[in-house]
Image (cartoon, rainbow, N blue to C red; front, side, top):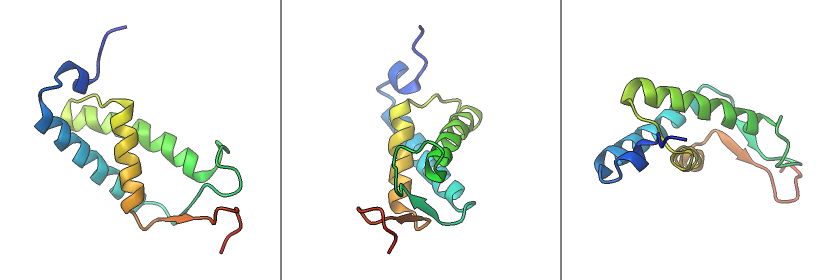
Length: 104
């Protein structure tokens, strides 16, 4: 299998990698604005049909396409995951359930 991730192909181009990651975080924040408030996890964090888990899968695929179209860049799965969760942490669109699963 050929290496295709830009971070691996050109690791010294740190400025470009940081620019893409910053843009990805902004991209995710903008996509979150398209949705109503999203409840994080709930009773079963491994419920793959839960809205948050479906949103994650959809936005990961769209972000790869976005990077290809606008940056001609292939992000690593780690870059995508990190920027997604940084955006989740900064967004006011997510509601976190109590640790016991009961809503407030």
